[in-house]
Structure formats: structure tokens, C-alpha cells
Length: 147
Image 1 (cartoon, one colour):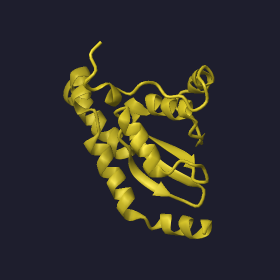
Image 2 (spheres, one colour):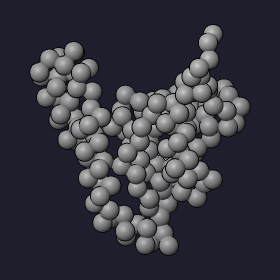
Image 3 (cartoon, rainbow, N blue to C red):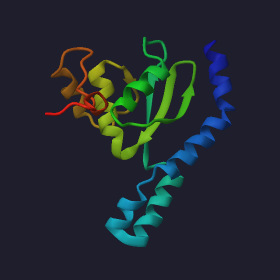
Image 4 (cartoon, rainbow, N blue to C red):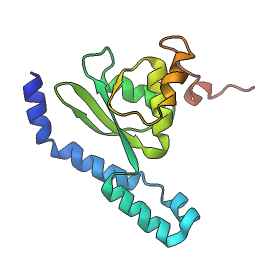
């Protein structure tokens, strides 16, 4: 089964094209314009084309977490994912680079096992400071509450 998933992923053009388009649609053009004007916007377009304005995570697909579970969990915290792919060993998806630290922290704290390079090596230390499977309160859960 693993071989076939890897083989089919090589031809998964739809999700790869969706990932490319999502990098452009999720780019921080306003922030780039505020920081550097037109040159900043051009730089952000270049980062989008090269894929350096997003971060890709790999999660072992033999865990209890499905891709839908992870997406639903991160969405509660305002993190949108795209470029979803499944290989023989991994669930693969991308997030905005400016949200990568937050997404990695949330997943590590919740106990979602990530593979590959980390965005912020300190997130592993932060994870250890909380009970296994713990999550911070999500803004989505706070709607309607007054403090």
C-alpha cells in the first residue's frame, strides 16, 4: 500500500497546483507593502513563487490523527492549511510561514508527532512544560464569552 501511495503522490498535480496557488493567495502583500512598498510586494511575489512564504509539515500517517482531524484542530486556532498530500509514510501540508511557529507549537503541545525539520526548536521545550495532549484555549471557543 505504501508503494502505491508514494507512486500516486508523484502524479498528484491537483494538490500541487492548489498548493502553488494558495502560496500566492495567502501571501502577506499588505505587510510587504507596508514594510518596503512596491519592492516588498515584488519580493513577496518572488517568495510565493519559490515557496519560501510557507512552511511544510510532515506527520506520520500511522498515528491516531487523520488529516481532517489536524486541519480541524488547527482551524480552531486560525491556522489554514493547504497542499494536502498523503504518501506511504506521511501526511503532508503547508501553512503560512508567519503562522508556522504557532501551528508547530499547537501540534507539538497536543501530541501530534511531526517529522522533519522544525520551524522553532524551542517548541519542543515548550511542549514539555504542559501535560501530554494539552491545548491552549482557542479563540473559536471563546466566542460569546465576556471577561
